Amino acid sequence: MPPAGGPPGAPEDDPPAGTPAELALEPVAEDERGTSLWRGAWRRLRRDPGAIAGAVIVLVFALVALLAPLIAPYAPAGAQWANQVTPSSVPGPSDEHLLGLDSFGSDLFTQLVYGARQSLVIGVVSTVIGLGFGAALGLLAGAFGGAVDVAVMRVVDIMLSIPSLLLAVSVAAVIGPSPTALMIAIGAAQVPIFARLLRGSMLGQRSSDYVLAASSLGLRRRRVVMSHMLPNSLSPVIVQGTLTLATAIIEVAALSYLGLGDPNPTVAEWGRMLVRAQDRLATDPHLAVLPGVCIAVTALGFTLFGEALRESLDPTFRR
Image (cartoon, rainbow, N blue to C red):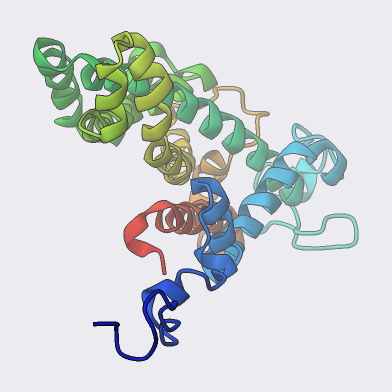
């Protein structure tokens, strides 16, 4: 019998509105279309107030550090106003000195500006050192597994058993006080963090379909690791690098406060400014408050941006 509703061979009625056949033809919203990982992350970062605030703080900090010679009105080693400083008082803000002088007779605003440059250089270089060596260990452990993984991770576990600040202090004490010692000390404390993170990310990629498909096609392990596993495992490492910069800036100030920084007294550094202000907290607290605020705000900026970047790249946080 012919189907109800028409003669044999007649076309069937169109599917009602809202059926899967019709929905499949509807245009997809812009936010729902397939986009790359970093493009989608950028789209979400633009809508995150925390990410915007963090990015502004980081940008201002970087510009101040890079343009310090143009922003600062005096040389960082200038102490030609030492005769204006007395044991009981320090000259405050004036037309000549925006924030006044420090306890050594140097322009306080100049010291803060050049201190940002010192913190940026040491923080970035130490993070690069920690990321480089940590990523190398994590790559070995995640790519080879087995005995290599066990040996590498036992070394990493030994490093993790020592508190990061204590490890940095030990390394800096052995090498001697210098900016190079600070970079190596802080970088060494960050190595196990990046090693464990990249190793875990790569182990998660080993069972992925595209890795199994590449291996079944006869590609060498080196090409599978470097061309497929490693690029898809770097996102959490990059995010951690942003967060670690905040920790590095705090540790730079802490080690300088302990006397393990640059021994040159003419080098401006926020941690050393805190040391110099200790004996004047009662009379001139701003000498310690201003560098402390700079350290806290800078670390907050990197933390806000790093947390927002992590959430934007994590599928569980996507709307």
